[in-house]
Length: 407
Image 1 (cartoon, one colour):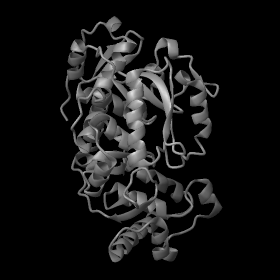
Image 2 (cartoon, helix red, strand yellow):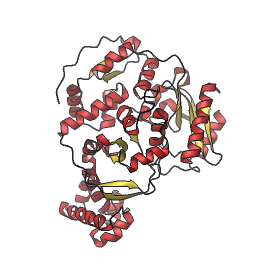
Image 3 (tube, one colour):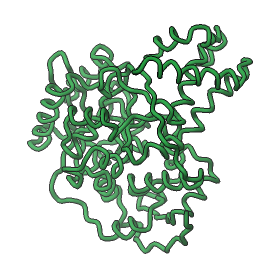
């Protein structure tokens, strides 16, 4: 990848206020309507991969930005236009087809890491390699997906139990490590058993995805370039958190993509792509309201884990269940936003088929209309809105009650 000399930025830091930067990130995420009509793969390419963890975030990511329904998203999963893969830091994201191979390469190191734990318990690499081949054979013989329990039954003693020591280290058997390595190589893929992204029950099937031909350094540069494009600019620390890169690798990638340092009115220094520096110089925050309900793990919030920056100054002391919202790295509830500013919080109450919400400044016609639209969409297409695999109506009851009380 060509290394670019970073141009000097002429942006006045005092003009880069929190309000403007919130609206800029909102725009870069396509939450201003710019992605209406886009395909699911285009949304993930332009706005960022969608964190899954067995929750409904991927669906709301697509619905909020492009109006894509759950059936359409599920059809795109089935036809492999989009897919859930382990990538940055080994975390699972839903990504577009063009990113499958290099996205897997980004997460390859995390797939290898568990073997180091097994090695300390006397498991040799040859044993895992043999198990990988046996898994491939079992899947070929089955002619369709097998879940981990079915695979374990088929493989019998080839799957070694690692006893109490293994359980303590998160490796009860050798099977997950072998599956992770095969998945990272694109030789198998994990598929949701009922076709839905918000239910964390999976089976494995053969794949045979051709590996990327890109060099490791080029893969790192591409990820960082995408990340800066998705966010519209991020601090060094934020970039490291998302990518998992070392300091040296992060600096090298910044240099290769020509990223420049941009001081802001709040004192942070953002690294930005040169084209975005030029666009930001001409950018004006929208004058009209743009209300969206997003998941707490939406790319707008998660990519930089900077939800505290999204609260207006007068809302920074807001609390729910004695926790100050602006001081938490990750939101405990889902945000209601207007042009990048968090104006309220919400949770879905499936028992009453409603969205429990707290609007900080009280009811607002535009916000109430959007709440009703998302409420109907969840009721009709999802049935519930889970944050992650273990989320349940019972587990979020206290939060629902707290939002009702606050609102």
